[in-house]
Length: 84
Image 1 (cartoon, rainbow, N blue to C red):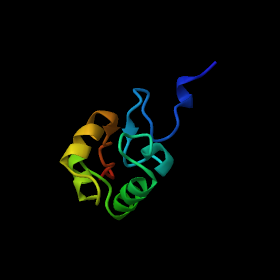
Image 2 (cartoon, rainbow, N blue to C red):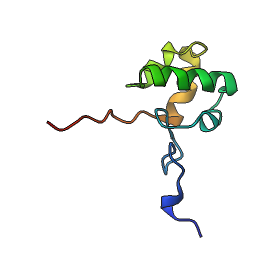
Image 3 (tube, rainbow, N blue to C red):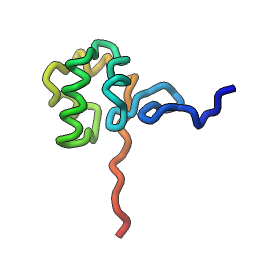
Image 4 (cartoon, one colour):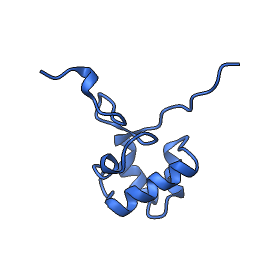
């Protein structure tokens, strides 16, 4: 019996990927994303996490068409801010 707590990190219960948390392997489950593009996405988010889906356009190999295919399958979690 599966628990809802068994959802892997980086994946929402809806099946969408949290693009700032998903592993490279999980990124490869997205349409048009193979190992090389997954590695570029991971490298870009290490440099600067994605704040919106449009931020994926800064990744070489992702253009407007690819972004539109990815958009329904990804989630950009809001950046956490320190209370203060």
